[in-house]
Length: 226
Length: 148
Image (cartoon, rainbow over all chains, first blue to last red; front, top):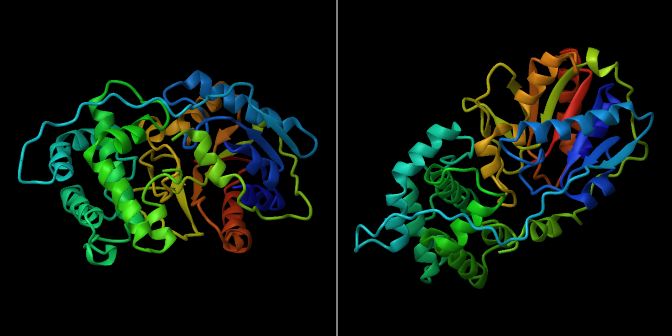
């Protein structure tokens, strides 16, 4: 993003860059940068909190008064200690013949549709795998987790993209099943740690790594530290 | 899994070096036209999605608020943007600043790039300058850059 700041300033447009990663905004040195110690994905801090967002914007636009390059720090942090997991109900077992993750995904479909309607589909699910096909996509990763070579498992697209749609499907459904906006990463932790679908994705990721799949094929199936 | 763990994976990635830092002095904010340029890979649903190594940009119509994310990285929280787009793309907040007279006006168009790029030469040499020209032609004085 700082590249754009440099390019736009050179074209005669003043810029203010928000940054969530301190070392990154320090090393790339945009002409005017505001480091905000907020979780990744929330550069203005708090969803649904217009007053807080305006405080961030006031601090950012305040840098336009500087008479030379400036890097400032916003005066409030929003820490994430990795412990906050969304408490979200899961569908009861319905089809005993289906893999638990497949059964679960089918059971979340109505919630997913409500989530799309409530959020305008902003999460970006359904980009390569339509909602109807999410259970089948999960079945492909089940096969990998059970030992099928990843290239023969029938993943319906590039693994990273399919994984993105599975996670987005679950997290969109979760937003419809709770009555509040989750803390940052809380719905992701719910997906990875509480759902059958998340367990399948983590297992498939480990198996693909063990199978010698190229690093980008398995690494980007989940957040990098998992 | 904590946010700091994810940041630790990405904070040491090398950035582009610029020998000099360009610096433009804007007009007073109350007279300025302000646009948002985000690297959150946003697009309208009827526009092309972003490819994994897409160094291009999408033009976002300020009058439409049907932005969706086209980011492929798993390394950010998506629930905040899903719940409130302003936490990434503060279009409503800029409207309020315009109404209060804090900024001159909100630009008619904004831009979105994909921030998860390892080879930034295309952005630096091609799509970045092209986006800047478009903004300049729209009379934009100030750009707020937001990541995801």
